[in-house]
Length: 408
Image (cartoon, rainbow, N blue to C red; front, side):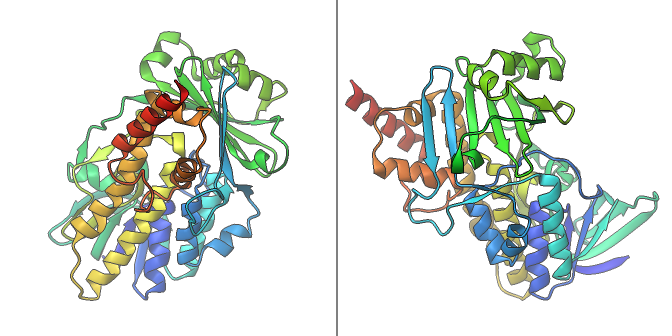
């Protein structure tokens, strides 16, 4: 049996940032990861809030040295030729206003190596199979099929889509969002906008909002292109993932033009039912972080932001608890994280029901709300000076009402 202060399940962004945080505070940290890194994963577009968390934990310089393409904003376009450009610098005075477009196999690997260099012990090929909460003992199998046990003072589940503790402790609960699919690949010869706009993420609204297309450019000239739609829309096409991807790209006015010279450099992949939720983010001796808690939707690139923010905050609170300080996990962790999750959820809901399109594509562009929207799109969803933070659904509806009154 291996003893440690903190056992972290999963070596993705939330696990790596938590490991780096805790190791730098002097705690013994074991990170167990089922897969070998580097490994392919989507979610390649970061938000400026990520840079703040990376900087806090001494990892931003490491990421900057990888020379990723700089992402300074987002472009939204529909097939009616409406276009909205949000520059992250035009925000509410946030600490960071640019970030990166990254291949996650490279980015995640660099973060995990950073955590290891700070002192966290990382073991790959380890699959967690059991958890004794009373004793805080985690049981796992290594790549040779041998059983191993870890005795920890605290366990952090950062297992992403694996949702290890959620399954073992029966914490999973259905997502409020409709089931959707993501069908994706990487292509070469993307026709990008000129200058800095070439590094922006672009979102194409397909048809009458039946689907949307992400366009994420990388520094090596390749581009991640994914299509997101409801299950029903995909299923009625009766196509393979590759046939569906080809069909949507060929029949979308914006995508057809941008990718007219493109060739695929990866097989087309598909992820089903990616949205998730849990009954609680913590318990006695354990906590959940990143996608092991709640994953919403890829439309606003919130996944890595929430992963880094939750992993970092959980690590700070774990350190407090292990140092003998009292921690109110409900208030200091779950309630705080849910402030940001609820803002993103409101924007996701408004995106899919079309309300957000009215804001993005409105001819009325007032600095006050465009800066607030830019801050949300930058990942600063906990800034209480932002009108959209707190009662977000109502604030979105109020803004739409104002826009309608001024345009009528």
